[in-house]
Image (tube, rainbow, N blue to C red):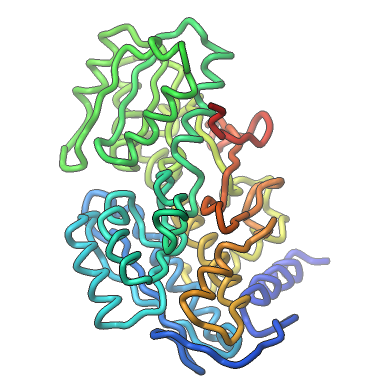
Length: 409
């Protein structure tokens, strides 16, 4: 089969996942809540298109393009998706304002893929009180996996704590006598990573010689990196968002500091972190992944990745393939499309939550082999596995096995 033909087949497969093609559920009586009708499903979204985390704006841009593609192919079960996305500039008060607008004025069926730990924390109680689904939160904070207290909120990204525990396990094996320096964002994101690291180190937590917070309003973290080096640390964990992660990697190199270096999964983007930091400065940096790298040649003939590339080529050609946030947005949109497909003609908020919490070994072509989406009534953490990787040359190279960072008490 020619490469062009392979791309066509892969793209057709992608559309069939969410479009009206293929096997359809047997629908009972039509049921709707606000935001759904015979012809339309309204989804509300909030993403930082501006501000200190604007690098994550790609998530919203890709999802808007994804649902445009779905609508061009007939929608989901014959209904067009109205994807309404607003900017909060990574500001929790602005997120609250935008959430109220989406729920009370735009009257969306659900909030979907809102980005950021702080922004989602700010709107969680409001949405749960209103019984509005807060689906597939773009954050790895553990608070999204709490169905008992927040029935209407489901996360998506692997847990930050679990990711940090995986790093701790590696450190204990490879450098058990090391001195650890931690840079972390001073909010729930950074604190979750720090908590997971401490748990993973257990009685070896004294290996940590400095825990250095930064605020997202800071211009740089250069002084923090200098302080860490001065303490003699030989292991550096960079629990930062893209702008600051790139600064830190670059400053480490400028100071000729040579620690064993880790960067969080939220900051593995070639476009927004590695290239700005300098490829030569990122050599040997370790992170963890759950999706295939769209810039990695090994996936060139992979059907799932061919579908992704063809989707971008047609619907968002200006998107940088090296932007990992684009892949994040795409993955979450794939999952949401499947949930809506399973809802059939029962587009109530209750049924939407039921379907979102009923995904069993759901495979998506862009996830790493062995990683699937799983949820349940008591499990609101869709992705719970990661694989370590190291930056070498011009690419991230996977190593070891797919791991779970589940905490064993």
